[in-house]
Image: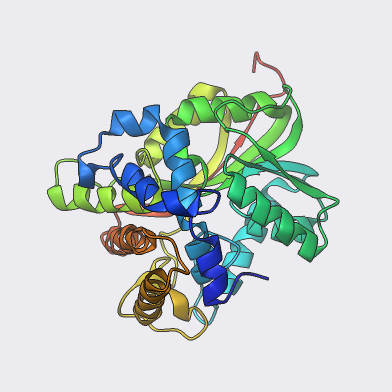
Length: 342
């Protein structure tokens, strides 16, 4: 179950930010990014504030357009977006197959799906209070509130003892970390020896050329539209895993060879009734609806500005996907050795 109506969207805009402060929060968020003169170093130094502002501002838009699971998926012909997302989550569960999990979790769509699919308990890690409140409400509605919970914390310094979890996963979440090595080291610390960490990461591919201005523009659009301090390369992710102490079992860009492009729902040339709100026509209707709600005082000032940088993200994601310089589907599975000497 997900928020579906215009008034639900309006009531959630801004998350835990006071409605009168939404516009100033948008302005502060924008200034972190290249488009507005921001620097990577500042984004990394202030990642917690930047990412929290981002998710307070965009979560209602995500839930309105995307549903409860805020991620992409490789897709087969004849498969709906919703079906591909569920299969993507099931695939991750099968790579781990154990009893206790933790993640960077959004409002917990994958958490609930994986808990039901694998009959496991899941602890969702999130540093955004608004998303946690939505997640707990949706857990109660889904009937998994006794086995699944959320902890408000920063994944760069998790409030768990060493060797706490049977498995750890992340779905397009650790890309918000300012430092992959620091984030993966914390995951390594809380994971039990001999157990696995699996994730889908947002990455620049080997085709990305840092000296190409068009490539840099696409990267900047994705960063501002998705609350990212930086976008790492696939090689940087693997190097950080190894440096943290993990044994990399296998890794693959699941976007490569996908029969249906992962970015298709956002492509302006694509139309689908099943994912209408993500299409160009659907986004046009949403934009005008939000404009009207803001004019009537039912949505806070600044709501249209949020949509503007989300639209930049959509453009950057589609172009990054077409040029194969970006992927949200870089998968890896890594194991913590049974002993530190291994």
